[in-house]
Amino acid sequence: MLKYEKVANQIELFIKENDLNQGDKLPILDDLTEEFKVSKSTIIKALDILEIKGLIYQVRGSGIFVRKSHRSGYINLSGGDGFRKDLEGFKLDSKVISLEQMVPPKKVALGLKLEDNEEVYHLKRLRIIEGAPLCLEESYFSKKHVIYLNNEIVQGSVFDYLRDDLKIEFGFTDIYLRIVDLSKKEAELMGLKEGDAALLSESMYHLHNGEPFNYSILKYHKDQAQFFVPTSRY
Amino acid sequence: MLKYEKVANQIELFIKENDLNQGDKLPILDDLTEEFKVSKSTIIKALDILEIKGLIYQVRGSGIFVRKSHRSGYINLSGGDGFRKDLEGFKLDSKVISLEQMVPPKKVALGLKLEDNEEVYHLKRLRIIEGAPLCLEESYFSKKHVIYLNNEIVQGSVFDYLRDDLKIEFGFTDIYLRIVDLSKKEAELMGLKEGDAALLSESMYHLHNGEPFNYSILKYHKDQAQFFVPTSRY
Image 1 (cartoon, rainbow over the protein chains, first blue to last red):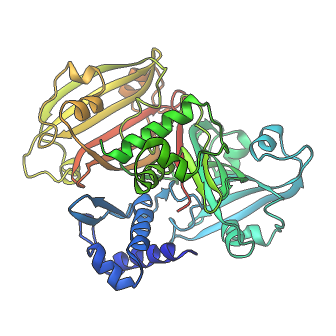
Image 2: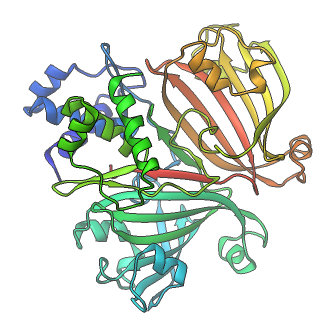
Image 3: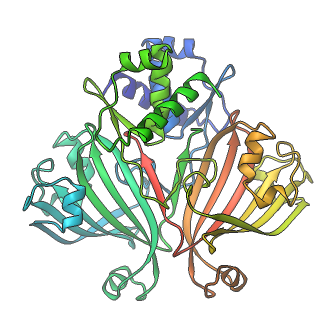
């Protein structure tokens, strides 16, 4: 983790520990520099991260202010590394439907920039929140980057494993959303009716160098999933 | 518009005019500084804006690269100032259902931080894309900030009017998404059936100084609306 990322985490903790609310003012730049014993440019970069994450806003000539933390249970789509962190405090489980190695459909291979016949890990899971179905997940992991997966790993957080064990550095993510109808089989897995609506999220995850490594299709239960998108002023 | 915002727009134009694709490299920092005749810090700030907007990604020690422009017809939820720009090239119309001045429901008054009995403009519109219903919109504008609205203005882009005529400087936006069922009346307006699913987006728009000025509830037609969320690595 880079120094400014650490400082950003520390400021985030400071906001939480002091129970600061929307509109509360943070210490001025000089005081933050003093407090965290880092350079001004490190603090500025840390504040930029917190602004992107939707935790603060900066007003020119006036100061740095806390942005309201979003409602509990909402999945923050700007996170880009799964929804585990947003659903802290909720009991999350996975029911693995299948994990196999395969040559993916052409569309997926193109998206992941794979050579002909290059294989992926193909994972299907039902994600469960507080005992109720949250979403159906279908993920394709490029084996070039995700060199190993097994049934035990995919019971838990795949993203924690990628970050902590495979040392994968996440980059940007493109997320597409639309409403779809559930098939009979999908509906059965979710405890819903055939043709019921689901929110489909289609994500391409990239490494920090821009290479795609994971393509995921999630179908969210219409009554269980709610989303939050904090946007900044650009 | 600030200097780095202008430069960001110029770089965006440069990417479009040169038809650059995902992964294409932009000129190095020194060359951009030379090209646009501004300071290095202005270029860095401009690049940060473009990264937030999902147009580029930066790789430490390696360069600045173009990020794929999203699919046509998708509404970019990170934009924060309406969807007109995303749907350029599509024919957009509005059918105004009502525009009135009123004391809003308590929840809205609280969200907009209004005093007791403070009035808002309350606008209901059907937004139409290429002749088909795109969404039902219900917006509350704080009269403290949006000092004047009339039927002619709300036929067009309210956000263009706020920016260009009222000189409102937009800040951050909180967007909440979930799936809801349409009422009989809503379904009729959208050409759908009672109980059909809609994507509900609930947004609180803030000024650059953090004051809320507009609360909007949009219900999107399930077959017409598709969304894009570009996220960065934090």
